[in-house]
Image 1 (cartoon, rainbow, N blue to C red):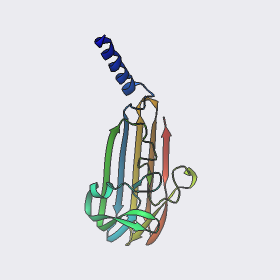
Image 2 (cartoon, rainbow, N blue to C red):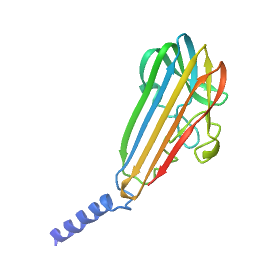
Image 3 (cartoon, rainbow, N blue to C red):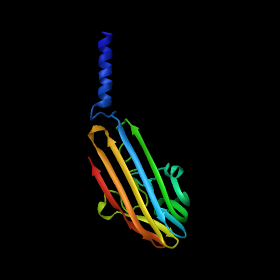
Image 4 (spheres, rainbow, N blue to C red):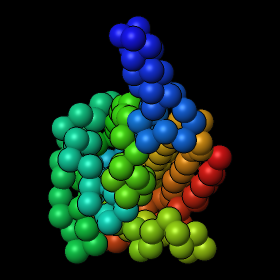
Length: 184
């Protein structure tokens, strides 16, 4: 009798963990954020950073970015939301990559950092997605790329990729953001 009860208990646990629509099935989230700045002189650039559905930025980005170049990076509050300030000279590349696995289906895209801060509209408004970027200094070029991947077991996945690049003028710039959004 104990063997049958153990078998049933193990079967239930395995079904909960591996059944395609189980709320306990493994889910994967990954983030890949990159900012490239090219300038021959001193500059200050304030650009968007990863944010959740409501525009709240991820608190781990600034503390864990990898920086290549003669620049300093800090978090700033602007009239348009939270941003990342990059100050320095010459070319720079700032990257942040993070991923994790979770099992609880109560998390959704609202809980993840699938958006960018300082956007004029969110990713549902695909027709007119613009990012606000501040620049101080001559001849500054910016490239921004952000990819969010969310795979929720065998039942689906969301892939979002934001890309913007442009030469910047002094003051606030509105950059057209190209958005690729796939749902599987």
